Image 1 (tube, helix red, strand yellow):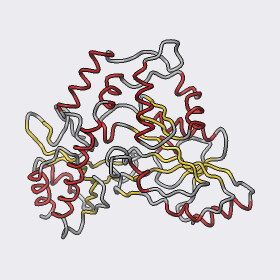
Image 2: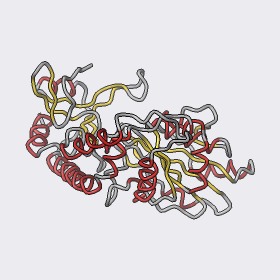
Image 3: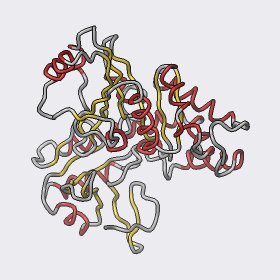
Image 4: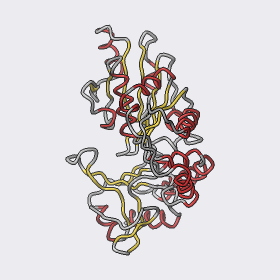
Length: 344
């Protein structure tokens, strides 16, 4: 356990000593970005720290309507619903679909989506064709499928091309948690949607945390008007307090900043990949996460004042995973120092 003394950016303080910080998330580095934090402060001046009202109150803040409309546009969806956390958005999306059909869960899906008793898990060893054959035999032609866009433990972008072979008499609602893709993946940060090519009988219902890239304590669900209307009727949406209005305000006014920070992040990913070309124990698949498969590497780096992510996840009893997590704030000199240490 490492206790830091300030909000991490490219560095952080421990006992008044500076350490390079390659842990946690905040891919776009917005937590200490002056432009972004100034917008948050302006949002506090305009709307206060919290809007303590349920979403079905008779006094609604128009800011949230604007936020949801722009979020729908950003993800190329018909509509969107915002929540106070990514966990709540994922759980609500899954529960809403579960009310209308059986929902199945793919391997390595975050508990926010998968830890509901209504779900059935697809064995990791079962092929998609074999799974569909089972559904065919049971005359189950309409069902939901839950998955993560990116498995953050190895930084693997999941491939959904297998869905192209789905026969047209099946109708699937695909619920994807894009927490680790939204904001940086794709030409404009639109996330996993940029890599998807779904057949017409597979409908996408997207959900995500806004904290991983945008540094916002909130979440959203995006999809067809039909599904979002169902989301807005769910008790998780109707009776909960929305995200801080100042954060919604900052997001609405940071479109250009997001693009600039995304380009910096992509440059950092590409530069570290170049520096580690000959490294045999560090793996990367084009995401901001680099897995260092070497026992004791986190401790060794800490002695050199470099912090990486190293803990059991997603459960306390899971095996620890060593991950280097980049953000847009890191300098080339930071990456060069890291690469040198990893090469020893």
